[in-house]
Amino acid sequence: MNLPLFIAKRIYSDQGDRRKVSRPAIRIATAGVAVGLAVMIITVAVVLGFKHTIRGKVIGFGSHIQVQNILSLSNTSEAYGVCVDDSLANVLKTIPGVRHVQRYAYTQGILKTDEDFLGMVFKGVGPEFDRDFIEQSLVEGELPVFSDSTTKYKMVVSRMIADKLQLKTGDRVFAYFIDSDGVRTRKFTVSGIYQTNMTRFDSQLCFTDLYAVNKLNGWFEDQCSGAELLVDDFDRLDDVEMEVVNTVNRTQDRYSQTLTSHTIHDVYPQVFSWLELLDINVWIILGLMICLAVITMITGLLIIILERTSMIGTLKAIGARNKTIRHTFLWFAAFVISQGLIIGDVVGIGIVLLQKYTGIVTLDPQTYYVTEAPMELNLPIIVLLNVVTLFVSISVLIIPTFFISHIHPAKSMRYE
Image (tube, rainbow, N blue to C red; front, side, top):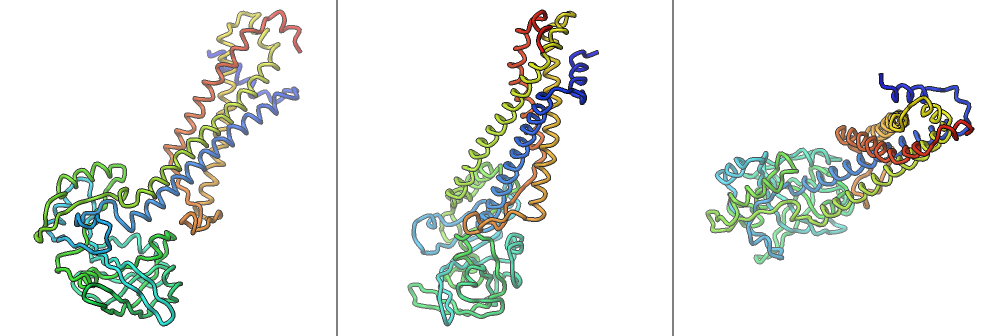
């Protein structure tokens, strides 16, 4: 029979205790653990949801890895094409970790209406374009079937662009393209309107056929700006990038253009650096909440020990060792902490689910790039938070239990 566990259960379940201090102290300690864990769960859920949402939007516009002309790395607005034919595409698809390959092409132009005009970046995509991200962001109209062999001059613009130029789906708008040969004019039809709240993209990027952009750039049929690669596992992005580097970097296409590659981290380092800063905030909050739980538990345990001085003296008088009595109060603390963890799990997970399915907490999209606070539940992390909180709290509570060794049976008999 485990004597410390038995005594701890009796103390914990003693609802008839008339003491005026111990019960409130236990409730405060339980509440401290519950609040600390709930805040940790919500914090981790918000940061994970925010990071993955923003990361997904950036990747939706630029993919994980881009293979392009090495001259494109220079700080010029001139478009440089490379040959991305079936042979190169098949080589890229066979690289371990790559799940999708798609061609793309960029050109710059001006959209003009009767009232206003706006400089734009036209992104041409082909039939292999991964449509999921833009379809999920579509707020009006439809996504056309993009082509690499013909074009109907249909385009998808952002809500921000549509509002500035007062465009709606079905409208036709002139686009002007300026190069060394002069000015060329094309008339596009607005097929759809998307909204991602990523200002740097929504303010200037529209989608159209790969064929149209290639013709505007004066490239051959098998040329484009490059190839975008999507990987299976974002955590292995650097490993896949090394495989891409070893496979295609510094090789030349049929037009003697040299290929190079870079990851989404290289293209938008400031965005990912900003997201990484969120991890620091998480660690600070986790540390503060664990300290809150530990402090309330230490206070509560000391109060319990002081009020149970007579019981401790009696146990010592009948031969109980200090170790046995310390284990008794550690078991008691484990019961209190466990109850706090259960309450914290229910409250924390409940708030996360409430926000996830109702979006009750809204945000300014101009500042946070999302209209509502994104939350993501990660059960392994929640389990880890419970285990770490319990382990740290019990470990720290070992110290105040040594106060028991200073209690003498004879003196404790007179203590009330």
